[in-house]
Image (cartoon, rainbow, N blue to C red; front, side):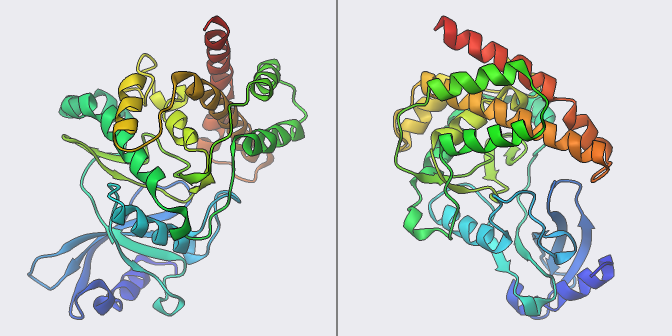
Length: 336
């Protein structure tokens, strides 16, 4: 299905499944967000009547092509979002999970939530000043709700703990045969400082600005669940702290907007376990190393011609930023 009109026709055929057999699609447009999936916004409802704002999240061309082997697939993602909403996590409501006979391929439809996802706007625009004051605590509470979801009641998810990820990304890094002394130092420290193991829980896998919808009141939705897995909850708590996800506001450790103590206190108050800043140090170091390796992968895709986009080249250049971040992290734990 290649044209907007064909897509609109397929959506119109879903009328009864979207709550109104006579309803029609209007204002269908593709959004720029979404690195690995198509994202389409549209209105649905009767002609001249009240309409519902909806989002179609769809594999490119309807054919699944996950951005990594860890991605759980759109069907599982929709099922997981259902469970998250039931647990009280702020997230979109899934309206319909598409079946083969719907003619849309791998896809699901959810309600459209008003707000902003662009990190630099959230961190700098005056209209989000009040939201920024609340956001660390709100994110801590949301993370606690995510981690409280009974893993017996979630789709079949991969399991990936800290040592698993360290081994995985070290193998990828060594496959480039391009030694980086800072990475070597980080790997050795990570191996020597592995924190005590915890029982696996549901982990979002990409909990950070860019995957959060924020309005003037603060956090309104957690998006992009495709990297969810069973793992160590501290991974989510540290990933939002990685300097790359502070978008220039390095002084605020949590996402560029908040204080770590406030974030962890809210997490514990909402039912999460007690987590210390020292535990975050290990996971933040691992996360910075992982992102550095991902940047290497991006550059290789550009260099090889597999994906000659400017975006891949630009992200690839950021590997040097992760080296600086790792030096700063290792200095901090040394001096602690």
